[in-house]
Amino acid sequence: MTDTVWGVVGILEPEERLYEALILRGQASVSDLAAEFGFTRSRVSRILGRLADRGLVTHLPGRPARFSAVMPDVAASELIAAQESQLRRLREYAEQLAAARRASSTARHPAELIEVIEGPVNVHKAFTRLHREAQTEMRVFDKPPYAAAESLAEGNSEEYRLLAEGRVRCRALYDRAGLTQPERMAEIWKGIQQGERARVAGSLPMKMAICDDRLALIPVSASGISAEEAAYLVHPSSLLDALSELFEATWEKAVPLNRRLTSSGNGQVLTKSERDILGLLAVGVTDETIARTFGWSVRTVRRHVRRIMEQTGAETRFQAGMEANRRGWV
Image (cartoon, rainbow, N blue to C red; front, side):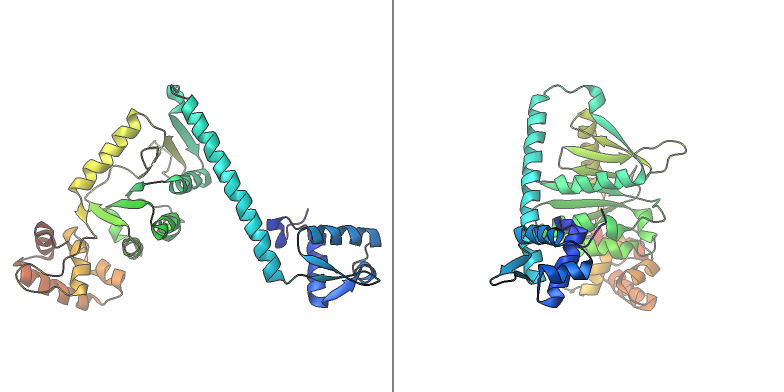
């Protein structure tokens, strides 16, 4: 069977050809279509019958029998809505089955508590699964090295969807070394602007994603195996509890990137630009990286940094960031 554009809603290739021919013709008889496509009249009649059943064509009154196409935007909308309804029913049914399985598995064998996910595609699918199953919160450790083809924007697409829906909180801890990666900081800031709560740690032990308190995904760390080639999917267990505690302990010690105040506490008002860069100063991000992140010149960054240093009484840019953090400005 040849894939077609309409195939996503179950319209086969011969049906698509006749339907699109009718769109262009306006209306046609069985004989007209049989002659155009080299089909028998009986085959054309069967195809038109299937198209009529799916709501794509209508049978016009009169003889000989003629057919016209339903406008494609209307037909597509109805077919897509019907398929979405079926997909929702499938999701609900799958969730019911999963809940029944969990309820019947009060004592799972230890071998079932950790799955080994192999292959970059399967690891990515598992990461996506965690985001799609999240009900209350996603927590993530993000650190280098990053695969050559790995895109933070692509990886965060599911997180952006959760943030847009507003039903799931997202917290991310970034390894400071990752902030120097080209374009990385700009993508991190995009997540923050969409509602992600972000902090930076000096060094993270690994990459990790935790979905609620139900699932965690961590890379396999072994000689000759890269982080994207294999991962452990951890189910509810003492190990999952430990990973959750690790995240929370690291989060408490990390430097926030989100928190904002409008005053320095001594009557001097911070500009929006200065508030934007305070969190980055606090974790030691370079002037060049800040400039790339916000599309500024390095000179502009340094002008803001000098003003912040004057307000904090700091002698270095790093001291200014740490003093701002101590005072609760970031």
